[in-house]
Length: 395
Image 1 (tube, rainbow, N blue to C red):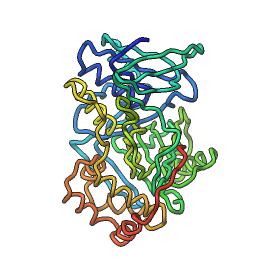
Image 2 (image 1 turned 90 degrees about the horizontal axis):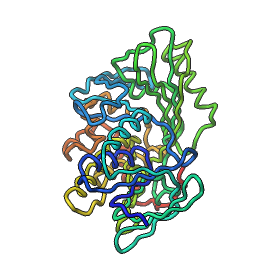
Image 3 (image 1 turned 120 degrees about the vertical axis):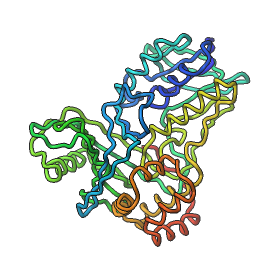
Image 4 (image 1 turned 135 degrees about the vertical axis):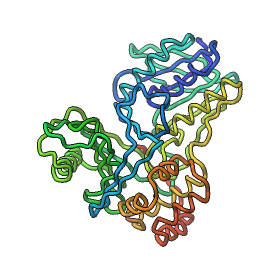
């Protein structure tokens, strides 16, 4: 049985990020095996990830575009503009990220990659045993001191509230100049709002003629495929004024937004990372930046010879605030579009982004909270402890 120091299961954002950071900061003798599913339904679909950071970053070579100017439109059409400098809002497409990381890993001795479907992970005295089936049907066993599993969960942990963030995006190109390439439309609420949820479009322009235009909805259930297209077409034509355009590519996804408590450890030497380990921010769906903090901490721990248990992805205070928001939204206590429009109209956007990263103090959090609808938030906070937890199927 082949033995490695670290086995990483899944080559999505979390698996690739951890492999990259281990190969950059770990001992040169560290043996790392990345196990990716063969092409097919188990492999992560192509994605666009957005995050923000100050100045240059580790993955700038893969960034499609970065912006410092953001805009939010209220349901009534009022525009709120702000400059988030020195932060930069960055867009990465998964194909470009994979290509960049592949180049990094190719230069690192001790790193290997294998395609296969992991069937079991069993704890052992000296680590864990991974059994996988390769694309040609053969079974292989691997022994690892540490295993990091980023595969999506088959079922979500029990929760008081679970909504789905479901989105459908078009990469469109227009013959006429339609977009402002220097400004992101972060949330445009000029779309029909669902009951007990919220919906918005966002626009990531890469030129005056091209942008990713995406419809996003927070709700308990999904739409039919044609409904996403109808909403995007209506938004592009009636709101953006893009009467004539070509759709060059599409993306679609579903992200659970839940106050569930995600276990980050499934055996003494087996850990969950990424969305499976709770990295997704429950109130927004942003995940990429949390993954970077999480995988960086794991890599540092291994380099220092410490137990590499992933740290909690979000503070207890952030989780508590998100739980109150989700409960209020799901039970009709909060008007989601008005909630966010009100925040972005009263709080500097850079401060809100720091808040969403959990990078604010208690006093700053209280200051931001005072700009929310206090009555509905308090009613939601009072009701929440009376709600039992139940299981939801993973999307």
